[in-house]
Image (cartoon, rainbow, N blue to C red; front, side, top):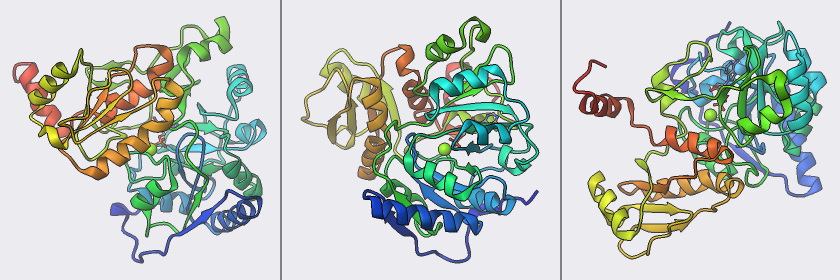
Length: 375
Ligand code: AMP
Ligand code: MG
């Protein structure tokens, strides 16, 4: 299979076109332009309801190699294949079990990815060399129309450079991939706001590989007793348990992260928050606070912003808030911890990974906490 070009440097800096899609006319023009580029084997950033995706023809190895290269994504990190119907999904997989049928009926189109044994039509490059493929039927009308017009499924990871914050606005895509891709379609703010829930149906009981807004209890309600106790992606020693093929565990633990250090804290009152931030060694006047319940006074902070205290609203706002704080470039961002409730598990997962120490820091803090264990 063609290897993604290393470093992701494209010889030519492209003139990235940005097309709006908010009227019937502009929508039709955007679908036509995106489909033409995809048919020609190029990559295009498209809105989905989770986050913006960088799409390529999932059946075209060269196009997928171009996608890995534009994102600087490691070759062993599998891509989710986006389809417009169960009929297209079942052509991407070797088996379509009853559990897949039930989940698809309940949650598609929507933010749920099903991992199943892959069909031969899906090249190895899409699955990171693995024997399984993740399939999802998105809800956003733009990407749905593009898939139908193209007549092939689209591999579409988030439209950002690898490991960085995902884009929930077209502007986020432009600032990360502008000059590296020919087209971004602006379909407005992502409605769900965080990446899909990923469920592995190749194991019994099924396992959540990545938490999302469709939580474990909702999956179990649909699968009933046949699903058994669906296992979560519990972290063991800080590393999320995952069955993704040949993934580097260090890379998994830290993901979806802003460049600015992020701390997830709970505080009793303003004085307690100040104390905790002092302990982090951050210059208070440059620190951004994102709070949903215990809102501190503004004085003395770089900024204090409210985020919704409902999981749907919080997920919708999360990445845009983190992008905004990141642009301020202060010493750090503090976000108020979210409730330990199934409806919040997708958001809690992103916060855990976004605030995980970088690999070097992780070694130091582990040494400190575990009495200098070898790492
Ligand atoms: P991203 O495209 O960055 O949103 O990430 C997609 C995620 O879905 C990967 O990081 C994996 O955790 C998961 N995934 C996708 N395809 C597979 C697969 N075939 N097997 C296991 N996990 C997968
Ligand atoms: Mg991503």
